[in-house]
Image (cartoon, rainbow, N blue to C red; front, side, top):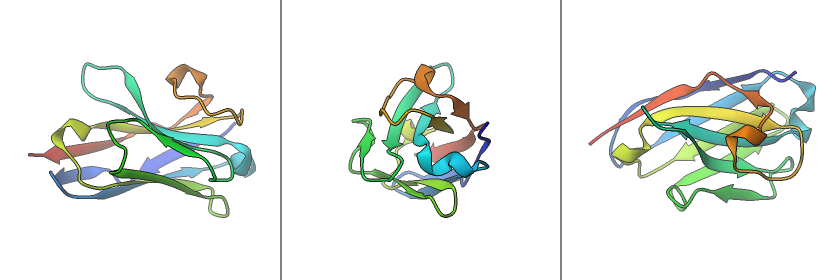
Length: 124
């Protein structure tokens, strides 16, 4: 079982930046595909970004491409989401998720582990 704990959320003005972190408990972190999802009030949980076990492959939702960057440090059991040029529509609870398989998937239902989320609020 992998436990995930997100941090780094907060209130930021439009155009600003935040860096989210997700710390994992398990030694198997380096073999776990990791992703970020987000959920705005009254909406479903949407894919944001994904990173392969080695970090060599990444993918992003169209809405965040060229603004967000996902990365990981397997030595620290941590995955990051650098968010730049934030917009009001980025306001959501951001969740870290892990998947035992190395296949990159963007559906929330394909993930085995979830954190509790961290709130990101972008004021316009």
